[in-house]
Amino acid sequence: MGPGPVRPVVAGADGCRGGWLVAVASSGRRALSAERLPDLEPVFARLAAGQLAALAVDIPIGLSGAGPRRCDAEARRLLGPRRSSVFPAPARAALGASCHAQASALNQQAGGKRLSLQSLSMLGRIGHVEHLVRRHPGQVVAECHPELSFCLMAGAPMAHPKRTAAGRTERLDALRAALDGIDAQASSPLFSAHPDDLLDAFACAWSAARLLAGEATVLGGDLDPTGLPMRIVA
Image (cartoon, rainbow, N blue to C red; front, side, top):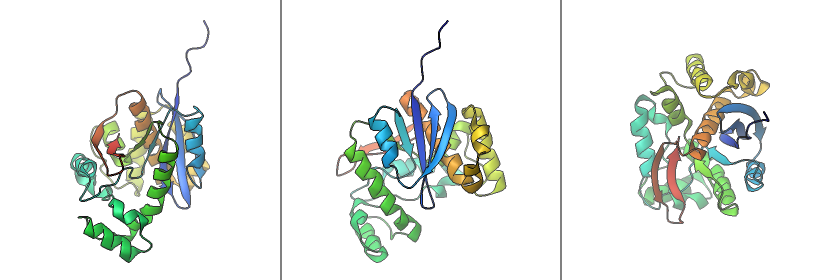
């Protein structure tokens, strides 16, 4: 008997200091590899070349013209005690701001709140991913929220914050049940350097596999003023 069909490969991406953690898994839910990249250009090139079938990334894709996004509100409702992990996505008007004060004022004018410094730091990443999405139309790319992925893996929101030892243990346990081979990735030097980000990246890869299989939970879905869907998949 010959080898079985080769399963498509998917990826999940989570921002880390100075770049991104990108986790790769088979659509059959096996963890394959992980790497740290300065940007996501190579990942989108792999999508365009057919080397990756889907990408789930922990960054807002699709920004509201006015008011909060429905997908963010739905994610907070599902996460309950972990709801604070879902930061409000900035309004589209704030994306081109040149400083914190301007971004906060524009976001407030669009019906949102003044932006925290943490939210402001996301603007460059949001613009980077949006640029790549527009350069590579037709690829399976979606916004993901790792805490929502972990919640669905385990059947309930995580009990502990992810930056605690107990939080890392319960998230790794959830991944062990969801992805074969995750222990080999968790023993890598990348895990020692970026434990939270690597766990989140593999959670996004798990959601990318679910999206490809038509099994993902999809929150929101309405279009932003430029036609991008405002949705979170998990």
